[in-house]
Each structure stands twice: as structure tokens, then as C-alpha cells.
Length: 115
Image (cartoon, rainbow, N blue to C red; front, side, top):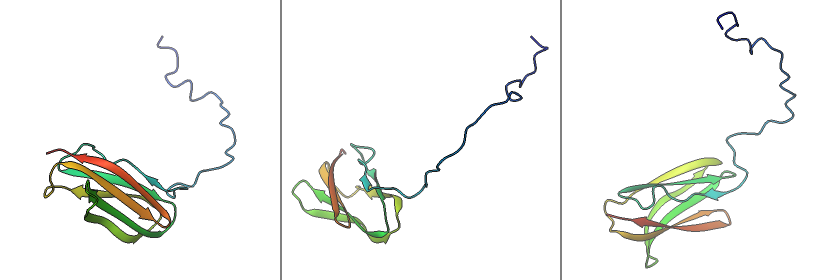
């Protein structure tokens, strides 16, 4: 029907309620280490992590024999989300582990390189 206003719902009253709290964005409340993406991968993979406060962070890559292969992050970082990218062009296929340390928290995850 052409006689009905096109935007009639906009003109109708609506109660949106009262805002009682707004979440603070940008500062995570807890530590989180995500699974690398993609996995399996070749030749690049990304590792995302969140830290709840400023502090020293360290992200290490180990081979399946437990040898330290590379240190991707070893720095003082601000609270928030961060991402590290690992270029594996000089490494062979196999299972690798990444270990993340922040303060007293240490977490390790597994990833697979397929060439």
C-alpha cells in the first residue's frame, strides 16, 4: 500500500530503558592464550594472546624434542590484546609447541607445520 508511511516505526514511541553499567573495553580481565591460526599452517601462523596488566611477556617456540627454536616475544607490553606471527620458511614440517609466560602464568600449546 503506497499510502502507508515508509518509516512509520521510527515515529512510534519506544522505551529503551536505562543504562545501568557500561563495560570498560580494551582491557581484558584475565590472561588468555589462543590456539594459533591457522593450524596446521605453512609458512605463517599467528598467535594471539591477551594480558590483563602491563608486564613482561615471553613467547617461545620449541620443537618436538624440547629444544628452543625461536623467541617471538620478549618484551614489556601494555595490557590488552596482542598478536605474534611466526614465519616458518626455514623450519621443517613437524609438531611444534609455543610457550607463553606472563608474570606467574605459563601456558603451552601445540601446533603443526605442514610443508
